[in-house]
Image (cartoon, rainbow, N blue to C red; front, side, top):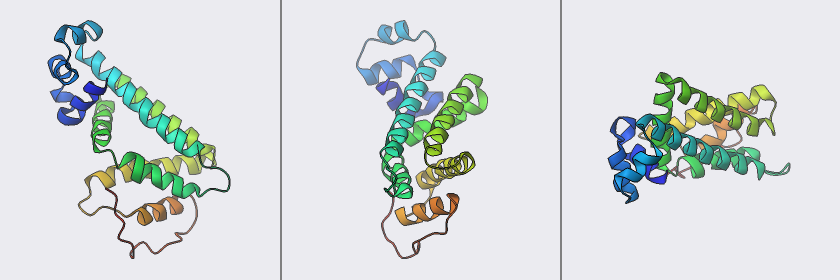
Length: 180
């Protein structure tokens, strides 16, 4: 799966082949075609592994935030450290979103991912706020990965604070810390 995800990040769904995955994994082509008879099956399994990795990491990050901890800081770190810091994962995520537009089985997988994220957030916020914060997290992922001028961690914190129902507590224009 790691090799399939590498190929997806590099070439997208349109460029994935059994041969490319076998080459990336340094295994015989027959090994890949034996386990994944169709490319759709290979892509589906790769996306399932990807979603489980991202959702589990997000759930663990939020679960580690205790009542006295800086929850907005935990979520900001999930964006800036866990998500934006891994460009290949972001590339695979875009492929996942593109697939969700066209394929119902990918849409269902993406929906389960959104539900897991919202459930993790709902441990700390009411359900409506959890959904809004999740939407902001998703939007920030897109923005930080394609923006020519990266957002600072403080800007991310300010946006999350507003989504969570509070006013920003920092001046977002004075920081130079940038998301990688």
